[in-house]
Amino acid sequence: MGDFEPRFTPTDYFRELTPGELFQASDRPLEVDLGCGDGTFLVEMARHYPERCFLGVERLEGRVDKVARKIKRSGLTNARVLRLESSYTVGWLLPAAGVSRLHLLCPDPWPKKKHHRRRLVADLEFQGGLERCLTPDGEFLHKTDNPEYFEVATGLFDQLPAFQRLDWPEDSFFYPRTDFEKQWLAAGRTIHRARWQLKK
Image (cartoon, rainbow, N blue to C red):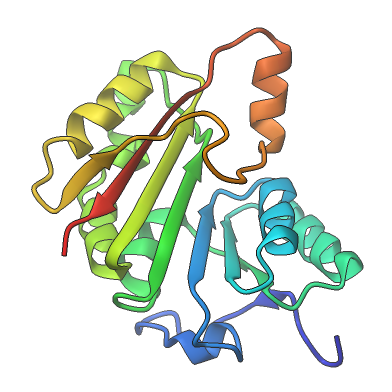
């Protein structure tokens, strides 16, 4: 791995990144895992798809350190983790038209009505940023165990003119479960999923 540093720290948080800053292999497709938790999904995807690069985004320091150690132990050079808030990352930091797939898996549903404004899918900065950072035909993939949150997300994104809903059959492609998804499935909950593509 040489001097590869799995934890990515921007030199400037107030300008848009270039693909080459994130990974030396800047010609590879870039995928982003928002709220990457303990890095289970991120690391498994990076192992399975060595021809792609994966950036995990997580705001909690302890989780970021854990993910960085997991990447290091796995010997991967196509995965990194960034400590930052998801909405700002998508809205302002990610390279324009530089992300082939963005994953939002089992986010905090903020179930209390007074907290609904904190939901990422309803954030205008996030919605606009997603349209800005995805490549033409890039995809937004979303999973949640919360049916009300899922209804809100699909209601919003199905109406956004820049996006079109795609089918997502079970086992249609390799897609490992996150730590939270495993936890919710073990508790008997149903996982809802939806996938959208940015229109050309």
